[in-house]
Amino acid sequence: MNETVTSHDDLTMRERMHAGLPYRGSGTANETNNEPAGTSRTSAEAARMTDRYQRLDLDDDPAAQELLGDLLGSMGEEVRIRPPFYVDYGYNIHIGDRLFANFGLTILDVCEVRIGNDVQIGPHVQILGPTHPLNPVDRARGWEGGCPVTIEDNVWLGGGAIVLPGVTVGHDSVIGAGSVVSKDVPPLSVAVGSPAKVVKTLHPDERSGQYAVENFPKEYRQQIATELHPRENDRTRTSEELS
Image (tube, rainbow, N blue to C red; front, side, top):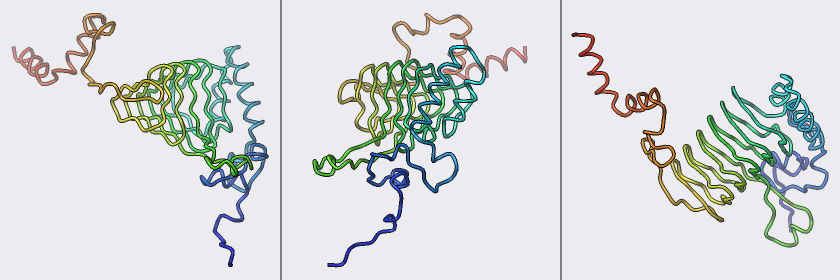
């Protein structure tokens, strides 16, 4: 019987990890490879960087933000991550503008994790890329893998939420505190529970309870009214200009 030869047979375990192929985790965390600079960082090096980031941040040292940019694969403007912050490697994490993440964020980035603009993340949230075989023999022999995770624009992940491998959370959605997200969440959804299920579809103009329109300052209520009725406001302004 002829042995099957594939194009990935000569890859290192780290390169297999990047390619989304099964790899053995033992040693991978500290294995170097022949890929572009920046993707050969070891897990131990990433841990030292996050530790230094925490110490710099506690001292209000501007170098903390620069170090965070070096740790991550890419980072937008006005990103705030309150330490402690834990990653596998860091370079597989891509963050847009105006992220706010509260204490204790963990991102296991054995594969790409992409986070959009204006995302808010509560304390002790976990975004997990790694997977393990269901086959007990392969699992016992140390094989594992990973699936990319995407958090789209303007998502709120409530405290303690866990986002599992391969999941996309659609834009403008809310994940309830403590929820375990095992499947994709459509845009403009509220999903809660374990496993998380969609319990509500959001409307951009909907405001109620603590955030009812009348509870906002006057200037913001006027801004909301302008956004809700732009044509009427345009006509009003035109009439005022002509009078």
